[in-house]
Length: 251
Image 1 (tube, rainbow, N blue to C red):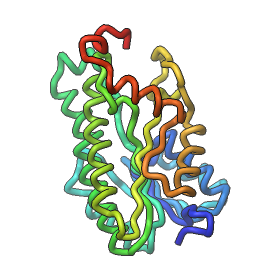
Image 2: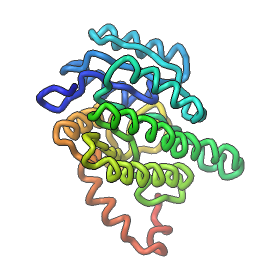
Image 3: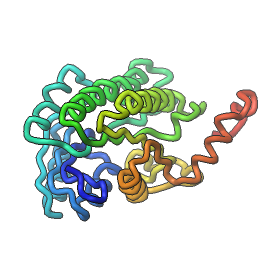
Image 4: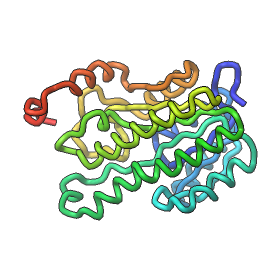
C-alpha cells in the first residue's frame, strides 16, 4: 500500500532500462519504496539497472517483457501481480525512431507506432485491470509534448505519442472512482541517451527533473504533469496556431 504521503511501497516499471524510469525509482527508493519489478527485454543493461537499485536497499526482480509482443503481456504482468499488490505501474517504454529514415522505410515507422502506441495500449489495459482488481494503485504513463501537435521534424514519433496520450486520458476517465489513479506525464526535450547528438530544444529538462515532477504528481494525485511546468502555457499557444503559420516554424 502507499504510505501516508501517497508514495508507493511497491512498483513495476514497464521499460526497465528507461533513464527517466530509473531516475524515478531511485528517488522513490530513497523515500519509502522497497519492492521493485523491472520489466524489459532480458539484457545486461536490465540486470545492471537491477543491481544498482539493489545497492540502494531495494528488493528488485526482473521480468521478461517486450512491448512488441502484446500476446505475452498478460503472462508477464500476471507473474508480477501474482506475487502481491503493486502500488505503482510506470509505463516508460518507447522509441524515438529516425524521422527521415523512417519516412523512406515504412516498416520502421510502423515499429515506432507499435512500440509507442499499440504496445502501450495492450500493457496499459492489462496493468489497469490488475490494479482495479486489487482496488488501488497508480498508473503513470510517460507521454511527451511531441504528442500535443505533430511537427514536421518528428511527426511519426509525435503521432504515436498523441495516440498514447489520448488513450491514457481516456483510461483515466474510465477508471475514475475505482481507486485506480492514472497520471499522464508530458516532458519536453529530455537530455538522455535517446536524444544524444540532437539539437537541444528550448526548456530542455533532465531525467532527474522529470522524476521529481512524477513524485510531486503522485503526492498530489495529479492527472497531468508537464515538465517543465512552463510547457503547459507554451503548448497551449502552439496548439492553437493556424496550420499555415505552424508549418513555417523552424521546428
